[in-house]
Image (cartoon, rainbow, N blue to C red; front, side, top):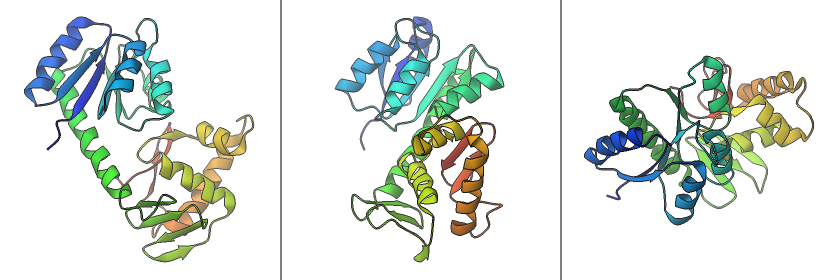
Length: 235
């Protein structure tokens, strides 16, 4: 079995050295960086399975690094920060992080969260690797054919409007990642967000009514309250 690689990015060397001990003991390969620019260099050279990313760093901070990483990569990102308010967490998650841990923390908690994120990530990859061709996205029983512009659930054809299809495809291409209403709106409407939140909410509700057996307990499109939406199984 391939040894999993974790990229740890934090300018506090004591934290890096401490977590290195714990992750090495668990059999992980650890790459170390002390700012966002060093992290980018590692990503150009190595295949990384998970990133642990501090927010406050010199040269390139964690926010900028997270945004840059999400332009092309889907591996899980756990953000670390001394800022631990609900708004800080919401900001981190909405930028593309999969988890957010406040400092100080218990190293065992970080290891446990990393294991959880890796399990989920590999499960998603397995689900999506079952796609039949480059233009088909599949998550469990949900199949999206981007060439034919068709959607089916457990073999049953579902008719979506072009805008509904675009939203579902966007979520599918960022499977497991939380997208804020503003991100969805800006990506598909190409205009200032303003009151776009209500528009997105209505479209999500309509999609759920068409693809979910029970829209009030969705199986595919999950709401992350205060953050946005993601294509993922129920927690």
